[in-house]
Structure formats: C-alpha cells, structure tokens
Amino acid sequence: MFGNVFYRNYPFYADDNVIVFKNDEINMFEMLFLTSVISKIASKYSYKEQFRLNSIDKIKIPLPPLYNFKKRKYEPDWEYMTYITIMIYDLAEFRLRSLKNE
Image (tube, rainbow, N blue to C red):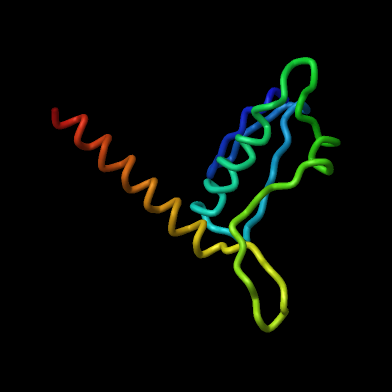
C-alpha cells in the first residue's frame, strides 16, 4: 500500500491492501534479496499514489543478470543473489553478536 515490503517465512494474515508474493522455488536468501529490491522500488509510493496490485504490471524489478549460453539470453543470477545476501546476513549477525558482548 505505502511501499512497505516484508519477508515472512511463517503463516500470517493480511488484509486486502496487502500484496503477497509467494514462490516455493526460490530460497530464503533470494527472497530477502527480492524484498530489498522491491522495497527500493516501492519506496516512491505514498498515500496519494499507493502501491497496489495494478502497480505491479508497471514496474520492472532489476536483478543481477547471468548470461545463459545454451539459451542465448540473460537470466536472473540466483546464485549471486544468494551469495550476496548470505554475506550481508552473516555480517549483520556478527555485528549484533559483537554489540551484545560490549
């Protein structure tokens, strides 16, 4: 609605102003990557111009590309998305542990 984007890995309830994306074929880290990219895009929306279901058709979600030589086209680089998100996740976890020990 206002551009808030969250990742949930547990059952939840939502009202009709919430758009839910579900994909069982990608892992948690890929979902976290997508959450951050969609959050950046959705941040331009406001009360006046809300992020709604019809907004989705108009946006392009930029993803890191990987060239598939067999298919002769670019595809999303899911491995990179996982790798970079794990690095950020581990760094944040390390920083939180160090703050608790201070």
